[in-house]
Each structure stands twice: as C-alpha cells, then as structure tokens.
Amino acid sequence: MAEHPKRKGIIIFGPPGAGKGTHASRLVEKLELAYIATGDILREAVAKGTPLGVEAAGYMNRGELVPDEVMIPIVEERLAQVNDKKGFLLDGFPRTVRQAAMLDDAARRNAIEIDKAIYLKTSKDAIVQRLSGRRICPGCGATYHVANIPPKVEGVCDKCGTPLVQREDDREAAIATRLAEYDKQTAEVIRYYREKGILAEVNGDLPVEASHPIIVKIISEGGRL
Ligand code: AMP
Image (cartoon, rainbow, N blue to C red):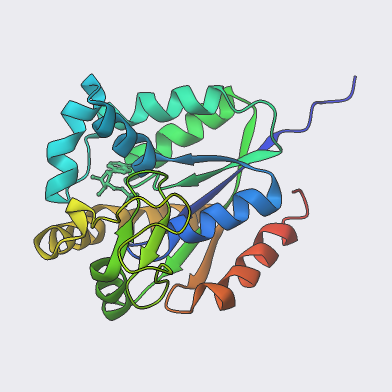
C-alpha cells in the first residue's frame, strides 16, 4: 500500500524585526501553506481578554518570552488541525530548544516533516530601525513602517481606515529586552537546526523584495512543495 506523503513544515525565524511576518504572509499566499504565527495567536488572545491573553500580556509587554509550558500546548493544538493544506509555515516558534524538541515530537505524531528552518540573519542597526518605525493596524492586523512602508494617509490603515498604533513591545525599553531574550534563548535554536542539516541562512538586512525570491527558491529546492 502506498504511503501517504508527509505534510511539510517550514520554520521562519530570526530576531525581532528580521521581517518574519512580512515574508511569512507572502509565502503563505504563494505556496498555499497554513500559517501558524505564535505572536499573532497571543496578540489575539490578549485583545479578547481570554485566560491565555491575561497570562501572556505581562510577558509580552515587557518583551519577555511567554513560558514554554504555555506555548507548547497552543502549538500542539494548531498542528493537529493542519489537514487540508500542503503544509504549514511556523512564524515565531520555536524560540527555545525545548520548543524545538517539542515540535519534533509533535511532527512525528502528526506525520509532518520539518523541511527547512529559514534563519533571517539581521544586524542590530536594521532591527532597531525596523521595530521603532513599525506601526500596526489594530483593526485588520496590517503592518506598516513610517519610512519603509508608509500608509497612503499618515497614521491610517490603507485597508480598513483604522488609526495605526505602535505595538507596546516595539517601544525602546521592550526592544532591548526582546533582543537580550533572543540572544539568550533563540540563538541556540540556530545551532539545533544547523546540526540537523535543515538550516538555511538568509540575509535579513536585505529589503523584502530582494530576500523574498531567495527564500522561495530555498523552499522550492526542497522540491516537495
Ligand atoms: P512576535 O510577534 O513573534 O515578535 O511575538 C511577540 C511576543 O509574543 C514575543 O516577544 C513573546 O513575548 C511572545 N511569543 C511569541 N512567540 C513565542 C514563543 N514561541 N515562545 C515564547 N514567547 C513567544
């Protein structure tokens, strides 16, 4: 009997401000992947005031990581629901080696193969410039940048007309904490995937137009999507 092909998992990660979300939304559309963005899941929970949101909000506003015990069940649940797509793209997870190990376990149980971990290697200057200028739409989730991707009318979302806001954790003090957390925890994740032989490094300082085709090529070279 022919085996069912495994579903594919692609991870996109890198420091805050590397452009993960921007790339992810383009890739998902182009490659028909399900999209799991842990930051978005958490922000939605905070906005709705669910028990998860109440628990996560403090960590997020300070720029700290939400504990693994909270994150792991959320991702487990989403992975089990990815049925009808060619695969999925994970944005913002794993951020610790413990999360990466959990992902491997869950992948085995759900007939998923983690195919590539795309690492957007980004300089500190680019990170600070991007995060401090980022503005988001609380209405539809669209993202802008005061200099790089300005809305047509200053301070207002092009898509739904809602006034744009700065994320609490894009303010200077939280940016510093997020970068320190990243250095402390997520850098180990790079090593984890390098050792597995599925790490693909992409220059995160490049404008999205330049790096996007590189990422598409890396994913397509796997030949399985
Ligand atoms: P992001 O939108 O990916 O930058 O995530 C925003 C914030 O959500 C992070 O600074 C963390 O506080 C929290 N968060 C998102 N994903 C994770 C994760 N995998 N593990 C722990 N905390 C996370």
